[in-house]
Image (cartoon, rainbow, N blue to C red; front, side):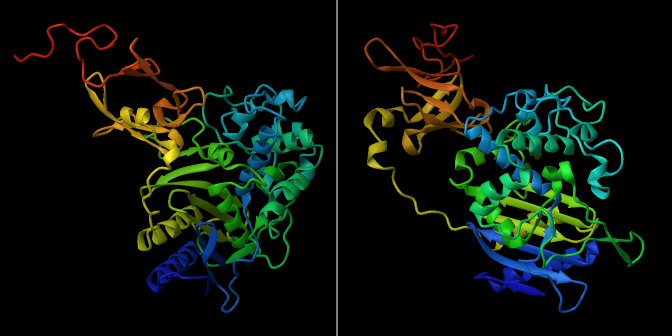
Length: 460
């Protein structure tokens, strides 16, 4: 057993060690590594192995499978931010003659392009890339299973297309773009396409007997952008910090936040699991986690990041099946969050420049019909509009240079909020995407669509 790094309470550290010990034992994994990141720094790592005295550590490589997709998505988002492509562009605009050109880049990123989940022919994870030398071999004669944009359907070939897109636009290999644009800036020197010692070997454990056999480790060729990478707990900790806060050398915080948003959620308060732009999303234990799970023959992996909690959990195992790495990574986050909750930032008043009398006069109760809302000031002259009680449509709004605000989340994302004034300059009401918010509920004379009964409120 190995543990490392700073300042956890002994009880917290023991709970973390116990969790990965249970995962290795019950999951029957030859070895298992867990790690926790707090506020961008590797806080703790631990390992368990079936060989006494030979446990891996945070610098031991494991294959991370589909976590690779997040790296590919970052490369695509960089191209978007540089103005070299648009997320709503058809693939055909930048990558010709694929047979899947009608699908958009955003649909490929969010797995809503309607493509098949796997390649035709032999099981691509355990067979030679020489069987799939061209994109046509990856997609097959009938690449679409559904109409693009209709539903989420996970697609490994879709990320092969995205990797080829990066190569077409950049003019270099996917590997070179990844190394130069992501791995080197983030200091991820132990993340590679092929294993570099020290690394774990991949094993299959018999489902009904305590015996095992080695799994092959194939070069995935064109499928590499979907699942090729090897990495370590320490390197994934650096990547977790990036997914939480962005890094101007790689991708701005705003673009990373865009990746973390549900690509097609059922509703702001309804979804429990989803997918963003290259990131899996999960709501568990009262917190939102973003990241990705991964698997290839001989390996299982997961990285979850709780942005609001400032925590990330990493779980790596060298077994084809058994250990529930996604559950373990989430549990590592939960253990630290519950045992050592994050200290809140000290309350501080807004900067003087962000407050004026007109803004203050807008705060307080507003009514949409008989629904009671409250408007509060936010940072940088933004506002928050939320129900006074119970469930309802809550949204934050960003101030616009020309006046008014635009919604940032929830039902009102992208909707305009503006103040409507009377001829004398006094405030009449707030207009939010045509909804009228007044200072009183159905006050006679207020600008309520359809008017208000002149006799006003009455009893029975």
